[in-house]
Length: 512
Image 1 (cartoon, rainbow, N blue to C red):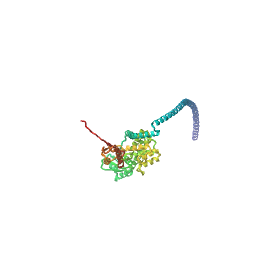
Image 2 (tube, one colour):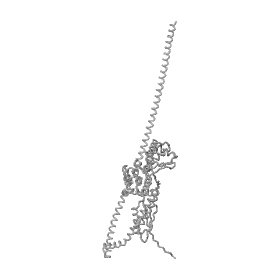
Image 3 (tube, one colour):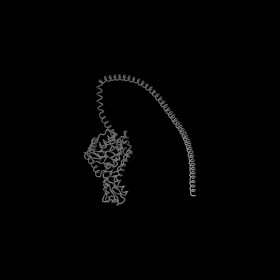
Image 4 (cartoon, rainbow, N blue to C red):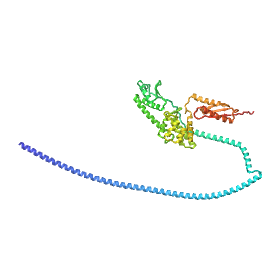
């Protein structure tokens, strides 16, 4: 019984396995046929899509060929029209030249005839002159040489005085015209170029939000202030001034770096040596950017292009350089404008004059780092960066170290003197200013015949009243030259000083 049951179970299991195998085989065959059908469909769609793209590409290619053909035909038409136009112009020019040649030939013939007539007339006049000369010699009893000698002696005696008067008059008129022209050019340049002058100082005051910040700036046992001064090279003065500290130093670039770094430290509030070093580095980079931008702005403002990048950077350094209290970059820009304006008035090279004016003090950007006067340093720098030789000569001559050989060099000299002589351009104490005025009047008073003298126009002009019974007109001319020469030898002054001699004689009578 049990064996039959086991056998039955085995038979059922085999039947089930056979049925499962048949079912899986049917399912697999169905999936395979479905995949084949799907692949055929994909292939058919791909062939259709490829065929469509091929047709589209053919259409696009045809359109591109047609477009290129139209462009070529248009270009050929344009060239054909241009050739026809040029051919017409050539024909017209040829006709014009033919007409001119005909006219020139006619003029040559006319001139030839006139030349023959002139020669005949000259021969007739020569014959007539000889006859008249012989007749005059017969009547006067003198030869032509003797008569010429007598006439020349008489005329020479009569004209000597007139010639002297005319020469003096022409010299006076030429001098007046040249002075008037020079005054007009210089005054026009000064009026059209107005620059501001700021007296630079060697300290900078930094405001603080409160007095507690002073302690944080000093730091524990002064470590913060020592680190700041070591990194910047600027003295930090903390005194009793409420809510303010002072940065002191003669190097304006370092002072600017210190100012930016300290302001950022105060704004940030975190003040310690590492932070100070970080802020000083950032400030140095910012100042370098300011220097480059200042140089680029100067070239843009003046219209001087094509400078070497290193020269542009040196120009930017002049923003932080002062001379006699005058900002050197602003002074250079003003000299550039003044030289350009005067060059335009005189009709010479404006670009060259402006370029020389802008670069004339470039040596002052590094004169504290390089030995020698700023003129020699500027010449060396411009030679190094292949600057125009005429610009280099103007730089070398702008303080009289060389004799100026070009008009542009003279204009740079004049513009430099004008900029330096502006009110406020040179910082001097009231005491030295008054002494200079007194010295001017003292120099004028040392000459015999001087009655009074007055220094006016801020010391740029002196008017001298002379005694008319002791100083005549010729003596006044000599006196004004002598006074000017003595001022040049004994007095130091910016720009130039005008000397005027006033001689007055009055006669009074009353009608009763």
